[in-house]
Length: 395
Image 1 (cartoon, rainbow, N blue to C red):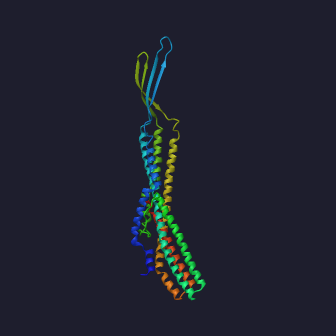
Image 2: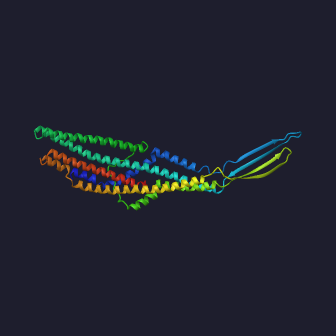
Image 3: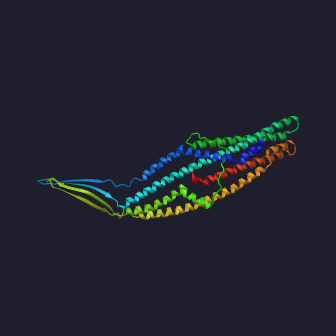
């Protein structure tokens, strides 16, 4: 097996290395989850929000009132009154507010999960970018090596009179272009690796892979959509917001019911007499909570419509990604088949050395080969990036 055939087999069919590659990506995602600063801050924020959601559903503070009066006249005396009271909402309000607090705490956990999922998707796409650039580097290294060899051959030919200056210029220009593309690739690769380190909290992360893992065939779209809906935290959060809005209606209905004041009262005088009793009061919310139930109902209706709209939008987006993945897979297979059958560089070099083709024809063929390889890499990257988005609910 010659060098070119070996390189092409690695480029097109990295199946034996793929399982290892997937394992490394999973390790990178686990490391990012542990070390990312934004995710850590969001986790703490979520804990704070959940604690806040469960506050405010206790009894209000009790009130203590002491009243003392003095009489005027020949025999002045004094009287006093002590009242200790507790205000209580209608009993159903506490149970409904507890339920509302649980729903809000769950919604905050879904918001955190959605943030985490998006972050891990970004990290996975960064891994895909790195693999793509490394595969591109291997292609460019092959191109630079071939251009360097051609320069050496034609420099010798120029000295013996077997080549002219025009041919020399074309060969050296190919070498210059290949070197420039290699430098650009190296710069992009270093930037991508640095971005991955940033996602990992600024810590270095081991990711040596230069091949993509084999992927499972796409499931039927309806099955994919069902699985996505069942697991996606973003949709769970929207469902939770609808439930919160509906529970807000129940809470406001309870708050529109009467409140009670219950307490103890003691009255005494300077003459030594005293009396004890209890106090019961009722507060009827005629004005304070006006229109709050209507407002809550309107918010619940909006949340319901918003949930359905987002479900439809998600289905449309997933359908587009699904169709894009199908088309990319078809193009990928076609490119792989065409590249296997394409005239390789070794044969092209032999034809040029034997004088069977001109330098112009040689570079035309060479450009076609490298452009085809680059298109293959572009399609492959787009395919894996699309799959990452389709399967992000698994992260």
